[in-house]
Structures are given as structure tokens and as C-alpha cells.
Length: 206
Image 1 (cartoon, rainbow, N blue to C red):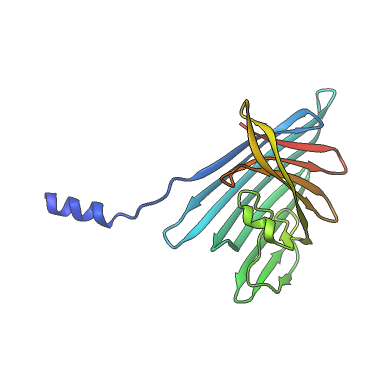
Image 2 (cartoon, rainbow, N blue to C red):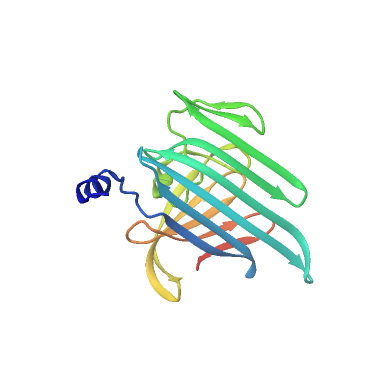
């Protein structure tokens, strides 16, 4: 292969941005229960692919009481969800959620057919601080489109990877759960806490 051909191949090769990832240790009421990883990659056509993988194992007296495994693949474009495929296993129960954007509506085909009349739908995409501007967010685990009241709680210092850092604190309040989330000065997602019927869940960056 001559030098001219090699140089042409180098010039024509697309530049693919390195994937961005968030890896969290997850605890419930202070006890470790598992991990949750988010990996965001760029595609050539200005789309983003988000892969989410959560594995929890809640034990009582060293015996597994509740096992949870959630996987989601989301396709994004211009901060809007274009396609969603998610699978959640809760002990023996499995829930599959599928949906895609079609013109001015986001159509959900599973677990039941539904249509969201909106040109731009966002999930609880904590990695993207633009969710803080939304009035409704799609739950990728259930397919529910939930009203969300989002408020700023100001700036505070939190511990991230062994260091105290300044973070902006926000609260996401829905009818089913409450979420506290923290972003750094560069809008980087740093931590999360959720209050559920079962207890307090904390996400801590590895």
C-alpha cells in the first residue's frame, strides 16, 4: 500500500469521541447492595448511545432477599430520546420496555402500547443536566411518563472519590419517588440519593 493511499485512509477515517462513563457503588440505608454503570458513546450521525447496567442484591442475614438487574439501551439526538429498549428483572419478574420517536410523538410498544404527544422526550437521564429543565420524565424501567417537580437547593460541599468538592444540589420530586442529585461546577454528575418505600438509596462514584 503506497503512502498516498495510507494518507487518504487516515483522512477519511471518522473521528469517534471516546466513550464517557459513570460507575457507581450503590448502598441502601448505608449497606452495599450493588453497582450501576452508565456508558455514553457518540455515533457518526450526531447521535448518542447510552447503555445502563444496574445489579443489586439485597440480603437479610446473608440470605438474598431481593435481586434486581436493569439494563437499558437509549439512543439520543439533540438531547431528545429517539429509541429505548430496557429490561428489568426483579427476582422472578421481568419487565421489558420498548419505544421510539415517530414524528411528533414517542410511541411505546411494551409493556403496553402508549403514545406520548411530545417532540422531545427525556428519561431520568441523570448524566444530562438538561433534565432539570423538564416538567415530565420517562421512567425506562416501567414506561411511565411522570410529572416531575425539580428545584435547586443551592451549592454545598460533598465527598467525591475521597475529596471534598463543591456541588450544585437539586431535588426531583415525583408522585412515586424523590431524588436528590448533585452536579459539579462543570455540570458533571457526581452523586445521587433516592428515597423509596424500601429505604434510602445512595449512589457514590467509584
